[in-house]
Length: 289
Length: 289
Image (cartoon, rainbow over all chains, first blue to last red; front, side, top):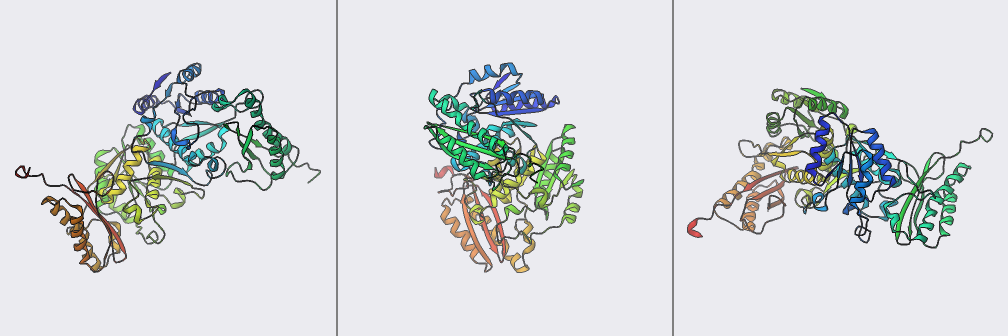
């Protein structure tokens, strides 16, 4: 596993691999790697001949007042975590390498970026699509891997790749959870022990929603109310949104007749967490039809 | 020379060429080809092993009230014009092929897009950078050729390619002119005989500016006044802008101590024309130093 810090060096390594006929896979990350990231890495090494993991805390996807400065950076530990996986290349550039002083180009996806994370974090998705485009242009992968935990992000990236005709397959891998259900996130390290306990409420509210839908509830407003009530029992949990949305458009659904995504964002203390789950309605019983 | 109408078909042709070790060049056009385009095609076939000419009247770079509907479309004549040049592939897709019903992604360059053409034609450069990105992703060229007649456009594309790390070399080729100086443009066909005579004033005003700078004038305001007076002598010429700008930033210069670009945009009757010229100041004489 080789570490590259410049665009030119990683490009040369990938070009050499491609010349040997190898397929190229990329896992874009901001580092502070956990088992969620590693599941993407594993999927990538299985599917592709040459795996590139990028580690870059991208300033343009953090808003003012967000946690760019304190976001965990621990390259040594990340390299150790990647060591067993058969990764070929790690690309960990500096800010200066990625954004020159005259940088002024952005990739903007309209529509699907506007609600939820886009509304709570203005400019966030513009930063994501811009850095992902740059990484795609540098690495020129055949396949790129994203986690379902950032459901809206994965949808935005898929929209961008389709709209800009990027010859790249996007694969979205399932959320990896702690035993108690908490979705893995690099931001979980911010949580105090008490906040950590309360943070379970996000996944618990999604489980509750899944159960209600499986039991035949069809009204999104009712399900949302149940989720909110569940979350409200935790004093340090401040909900940003709870939504039941169409999996392709991120628009709220009027009734649950097909699979929907339940998405939740909440501050737990000072830490902003997100989670989501696909809810699949029960087949209507033939007796009721 | 093969004609392709789908992204998949041109991609396969280019991929096959690349596998043979050929370098790929692209000349993006909106068709209605003239000798200016053909000079780009010639430069491309000389520099690259496999030349792709794209012909697509891109709707997203036309504003409301602009000439998208009447823009000349004549694919048959274009293919004939290209026949002698050793072009390998022409990519001429439909609007539907290039923009799906859910298209919502745009590439936006800030800064250098804002004055002049950007100010006169809101959204124009966003359309240009978006379609050029799409064509680059489809063709994946090593080199792309643009004309200096659209000076600001070439600068915007260079900025975009640098900022997004596209592994593509941008070459800008000189303006091709009619014997009387008029810059070739697909829009020249709109001009009546009388307008055609008055249209000479754009290049004449640039020649005047070049002469004044060569003779030692250093004050942009004075030179601009001379150009405007020259243009004002033509009753059907309505100036949109005359500017003396830094060749890299498109910002107006305060004095002419280094090469500057003189740029002019004007309606001649109903037809909007642009032209530009690099002005190089005379070396200060040693006697004056």
